[in-house]
Each structure stands twice: as C-alpha cells, then as structure tokens.
Length: 272
Image (cartoon, rainbow, N blue to C red; front, side, top):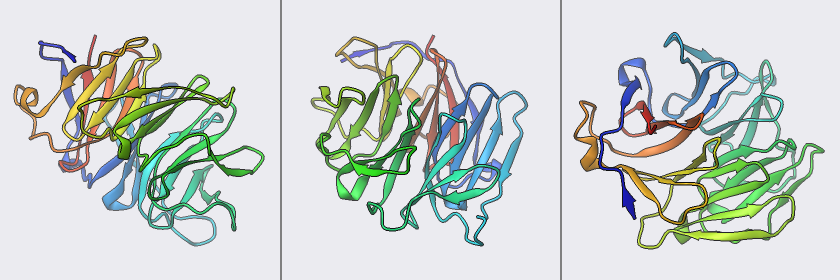
C-alpha cells in the first residue's frame, strides 16, 4: 500500500452546531451545487448549498400521511430525483415534490437497506445488508435479486458508467460487476484491511473507499490503494477527533466529501 506523505487541504462544511445527528448517506448534485444529506438521527433529509453554506430541511411527510422513518442512504436517479433507503420501514422512498414509497407491495423484501445507487438506464440498486444480496429495481417496476453477485453483508454501493461497485463488507473486498453484460468482471481484493464501509468513484473512475477511520484512494487501473486519511494524520488538523467515516461523495476529480457519523460533521478533502 502506498501513501501520501503530505497534509491534504481540508475544511469543515458542517459541524454538530448545525444540528446534525448521525449524518449517514450523502449525494452531491453537481448541476445545482447542492449536497443532500441523510441526517439519520434527526429522521430528516437536509439540503446544503455549497456556495452559500445555507442548510435547508426537506419535509419528511409523505402523501399518504406517513413519514420517513430512519433515512440511511441517498442517491440521485437519472431524472435527478432523490431516492432514499429507510431502514426503519425497510423500504425505498423517492422525492418528486413530495416523498412516495416506491417499493411495491409483495416485492422482494429488504432487511436493512444499507446503500443505494442509480445508473443512467434508470435502474436502482440497493445493498440488502442483512440478506447478503444486491437488489435491482427496474424503471418498468420489476424487482429482482442480482443472483450473480455473491456477497456477505454488502454496505457501500456505487454505479459508474456500466459497472456496479459493491463494498462486500462481510468478505472484506470490493466487487466490480458489469451491469450490461451480466458477467462480473473481477474482484478487487482488499488483502489485510478492515472491512470497507462506503465506496464512491470520481469522474476519472478512481475509487474512494472508507474503513471506519481510514480513507483510501484506488487510482483507476491500479491495484495499489493509497492511504489518504487515518486517525493519526487527522491529528494534523484542528478538527474534532475522527471517529467513523460513514459516507463519501466525490465532486469532480479532486474533491471528496466525507461524513463522520459519530462526530456529526461533514468535511471536504482536496486531493489535487
């Protein structure tokens, strides 16, 4: 494993004083320069305006009188609508001017949907953590288990181009799966590491993944991960102690956003 021996520029975007409580999933809207956050402990979704620093709360009421339970993971679909996993109700919500439960009655049941991602073909993928599987929701309404992906307690999930990347947490590896060919291309094995929790890719295809208090970069085409941040290097900053990197969201090629789910903070890291 190679390492960067320089202090990376970083800044604190949101801290506990902003009212965060266990921020989990994040997704960045490049077009509108907005960061969407699952403020899990407060049972709400927040919108953070990157240019102004303003924080807005999205109403959690649904059209049928119900409310979001515990939002854990969030993504933007191909039509630029938010989709969120709710681990209290084990379902998926979509925001289209208001929240709607899009998981059909009688469909494949979810048990702790830990992550969610969408591809350009309007498919939605969910990491069904306690059932050790990945579930696919098609735009036609079909729901199916992706039987070709063999995983244990999958947590992080990220769609990039025609590939699906899975943080196969229970098996301590990252899987890369070809969504168009239906054949898994290869396993990216993380030998000697703790279990990957969150995963994301930038525009260049570089892979970022987190393991508790460590952040790694796997450059495109490489098998040699680079350590970007760990608890020891974090002491070089004037931030609170790094406790748990729960989610990642890239901006372009050189910026990665990280949430500390325990310290109730969100940071911006510049790797350029």
